Length: 204
Image 1 (cartoon, one colour):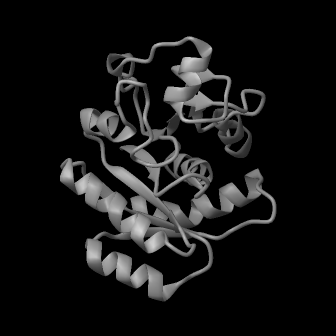
Image 2 (cartoon, rainbow, N blue to C red):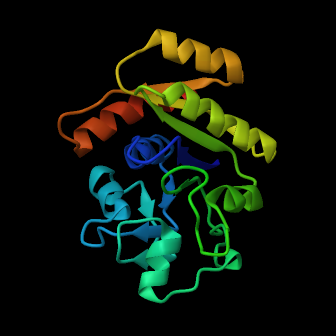
């Protein structure tokens, strides 16, 4: 199984969800572009939170500034091209984590993450965190994916159950709810392992 993990925006829980799903599938994890926080990257976090059944691939680009890849790359004097990204050839399951939302620019020529996802044609697991406006952001994200004929595996909701929000999103999109990840006061391997056990049933 190969999945892309994308979110409806920034700071919605993509990396935590990626770690949990990678652990549930005992998959290889890959984040193609890391922008900022090079002392504690998302790859490092996933490696710390998961066990040795999860393999971590190095990023294709490590950019210094915590901003959109196109802007961070320009500051670093790096030219990012669409052909720079190839799906790793490996045995077993693969989890690829995007950055920000679908329309985040990868380079200054207008190449977006959604363009990359369309090129790869892998199913997307969309991460939706509950906040005022999240219904709109989730429905817009699903509509954008559908418009590119990018397959959507389903939605993972982050936060306490909100039946009013979740039901309307699932009804309008017709998508499956893969699971729900609660908010945690402290992120550690115990939380990731516990959530992975619960989420694993979906993929069986």
